[in-house]
Amino acid sequence: MEKIGFIGLGIMGKPMATHLVKAGYPVFVLSSSANAAALMKEGAVLMNNSKELAGNADIIITMLPDSPEVESVLFKDGLEHSMIPGSLFIDMSTIAPATSIAIFNTLQQKGIGSLDAPVSGGQTGAEAATLSIMVGGSETAFKRALPVFEKMGKNIVHIGKPGSGQITKACNQIVVGLTIQAIAEALTLAKKSGVDIAKVRAALLGGFAQSKILDLHGQRIIDRNFKPGFKIKLHRKDMKIALQTGREVSVPLPGTVVVASQMDAIIAKGDGDLDHSALALYLESVSGL
Ligand code: NAD
Image (cartoon, rainbow, N blue to C red; front, top):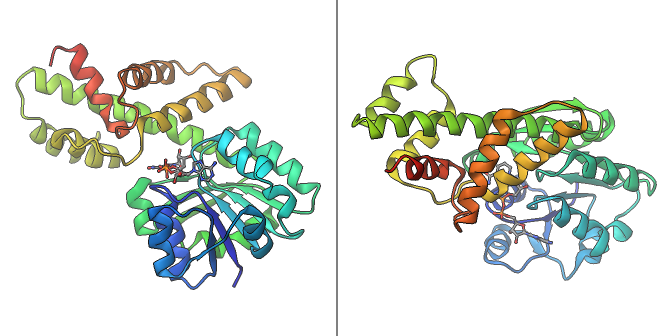
């Protein structure tokens, strides 16, 4: 089995890496965080530094917050120089498509393959190994990575050229963000009108308005459970990626602009680490609730 270096053991990375260890892959980690310690109990091996990790791994997977962190790990911490020619770099974080393309081009010159493979499905999908994985890069690299992806996800789609996985993820985040907005608006209207929002959710779930987001995030809003999940500051980062991509190809994204500015208001208030379903809090506060 291919030896895997996994960097970024947060809300998503920890369960994803755990599935790989449990499937029998040799998995190497860098951090000495609590999450890494839990993973080591399952059988992952701690490396002293990036050089050691890269020297031992056939495949390196990153699951980091944003483009600067992925670039830092690759180009500042020296991973790029330590990866073995013929190895494969897979970034599963959500980052700018342009960064994914630049990484692909840089690593290609060194004989190292590269895939952008962001995911959707959230913490529950990561824990259940049912993530949707959207992949940009060569067919050969995709085929090599597929058995690894199958341990973490269910709906695995090779979209096309480098960067196209990230474009797909930007589309995903527009749909998710605007759907949360719709549900938050609807439940705020119901609440201010004195109608039981749990019953509104139950009624809507049986009709044309039903969605996974109404199901999961509607319940979060009812329960006032805004523990992440997916931090609103990370979703704001994804809206920035979508808006930047829109500008590059001259597609206005008016709904995305509105939702992004409401996320800004929540972050400015100091609530950026809440789950993205906390969009409802903004609407409630401007509605006098
Ligand atoms: P997180 O903040 O929980 O985890 C990020 C991890 O990266 C942390 O463990 C942090 O210590 C580590 N890290 C940060 N900088 C680092 C560096 N320079 N070197 C090594 N490690 C570093 O975030 P998350 O929710 O797991 O999200 C990770 C990525 O997945 C993000 O791009 C996010 O947009 C995307 N994503 C998240 C979800 C979700 O529901 N949480 C769903 C789909 C995609």
